[in-house]
Length: 381
Image (cartoon, rainbow, N blue to C red; front, side, top):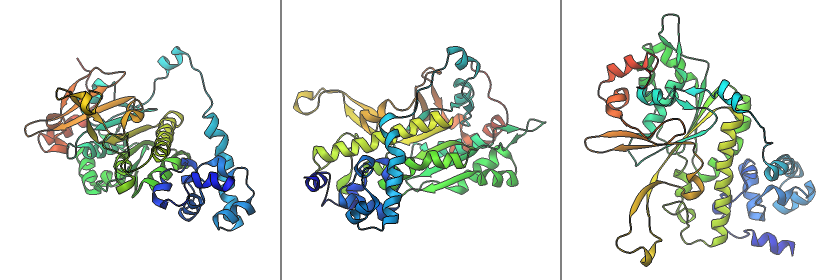
């Protein structure tokens, strides 16, 4: 019976597809152990907690030492997987007197409208079509977050803040960040110092992305100066990958049954929870870029009718839709490049002309933007 249950959990399917269904805590295991676990049908921490090292070693074809490593990891995470983080209570006066840190994005008008920048302790999303400028703005954030200090004469300097940049698409360009840093700081030596404070990691697959997110908390515990985590983009590997990919709106699979869909939804929900918990518990800003898709406002199919309205929405479906506390849309047409504050608890919906405000990125008025970046943002009137 136990063998049949494990078989139902996924024995005989491809390792790549099963790996994406692993509990996020088990995804943190070394690659060879991950593959052995999924091939044997172990998909979450509670599948292995009760086993002895010898029994698990036989099941997955590993050494007892490796099996014990998996069991120790599973036991350390099992309670937290069920219970979550402990709940803490604060008064409204605490929140008022000790507001969350604001991290400048480097867009003067937007920073002023947000009260100094994007808020630490939450997930912030920027979404838009390919080529709209999501990665450019993310690289600007990585530079502006570090170069937000001022010396005695008011000249921008590097703070001790660090940034972790997670690149899933291979679009990060260090030379571009150096140009941005040089424009803000005005010194090649200072720009190089800024680059040394950006940690970079390239993620190549869904499995690597899930494993990295699961390990982020411990990484930030080892590197406490990291105050900004940039995930560019969150959707790329979750929507690609051939037969194991999500549908265009992140809510369905191609050629997969409801069991696979449920497991993938669970894996994504765990990732979203870990990102939210990371921001709140470590007091950092989690900034993610996301793709967009078009969704009909009707019920779909023939019932929607020819007159059904369509709207542009972030990818990854309803499961993700309510995770970010703030959401920006970025657009790029033939004659206008803009950023819309779509959702924010501290800022009304505003549309910002990026060609005017971010010439340092998009090629017009760069000298004026550099000068503005060297001054504290003005009050919004």
